[in-house]
Image: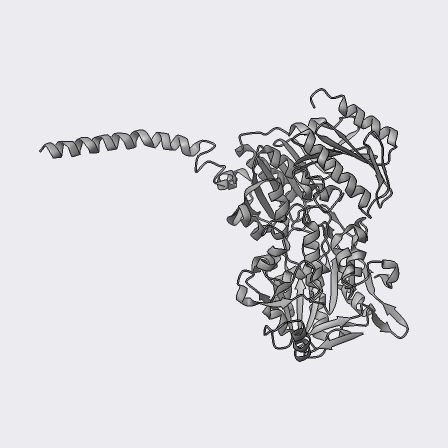
Length: 316
Length: 320
């Protein structure tokens, strides 16, 4: 079940937790129970579609969850957060997946599709993503990550390490949030996926605070970093996650280059903890190995035990 | 008149001084520590078109110094800083077929840092090349280190032309780096028999260690210098060096508490010979011992007897 809360209700709820900062005009705060009823009687938590046509994989995976219209309403404004950290192979969300996502949103009748980013245009061009956005008629909205006036403070009432986030104001001008990371290695905490991708909405100054001692990670602070990521995820909840697990780096992350494996999978769902837990298994890790996933589970953001989730795997 | 003579005399001295100063300045600037030496201006290491076999520079080179590395590689910068990062220059190249190669020349604090970063960035399975102090070619990229530099070249496909281009550009850069480096002495502490040389990882901090094997998220070992090697895929051998015996003992005691209390490990045992034994989540045994100022760890498929033998062999070294 997906519950949509408009700005008025969000502010009312937020007032109870001391939130008074004005945010965008139509912020939609999603509350989900992590499961989707695709069709009568069938409950799917995560759809995984494999095959060498990544466009088809993406479309099919969303269909398995009941189709894009379950997530994107007519005339809604959709924010998409892809990963464009570098143009090195296996280090960014592939353009073909973004094309599929935009194309589905258009078919659902989205009023506006906005790809948001804190990274410069050259990253989008180098990765081939800018071209897709242009061809598909979506918008690329680049936010200067160092201009604090473009961000707004969001309190994190359940935050254990992070008490407030600084989210780009532009994000709140949207009704729907599609999180589109690539899962890959990360030298900081060994894994990146749906939860870590949300740092892409947060100001650089705030992201720096995830790393103790200013910008640099305190050598003993991997746990602190992962707690901050889980805390951030406790206030920003994607409507849908579409994860690129087609070809990605398992070493040299997050920037690359590094060894690439090619599971050719697109992983779609809402439960970020479960999705990330699933993705760890694609390269021989266990969900419990990743502190961030454990922290997300402790925050009740989702389920770490994959046996408790309905995972539908399909080959196209 | 007298004043005029003094002025002329002073001007002559000044000119003479300048003439003598210029060659000195020239020598200074071209010395390894000079302001315009390659160490200070990494552009001097970039190859020209004549040296790259048709690969032309695409755009201006970008230089990131110190903390600016985070602007370039964001969260990936931490590991470079752990090893000791000074600056990097990035230059893209294009050939006539519009194929692209990215060249990154990282200047690290010293050869130990460059070697450590090289081991972090390379993995088993690559093709070793005779280039610099050590080089490895992987599917679409290559790394080499020489002196205090680690160089990464990335092609964006695996075409033969691109791979040849990587090597051509790499050799041109390598020729410009005149000073080689030596591997840290700790490398020689790994027994050579059955060692998989491409598996070696040299550590300068917990982040590197954590990426090799996540013993603890916290910096329990307080690692400043360490090394790991794999042996015929049966076990991994870690050696962590401390400044003195006392610090080593302190860290060993902390590790004992950590292993005993962590839910990641089970079957904790500790005997009177100060050998810690645990089993990790993957069922592999881990043995931890201490000798003088070294913590020794083996992890893998082996018995306690085998582990003790490895530790005993280490203790027989005369150069510890």
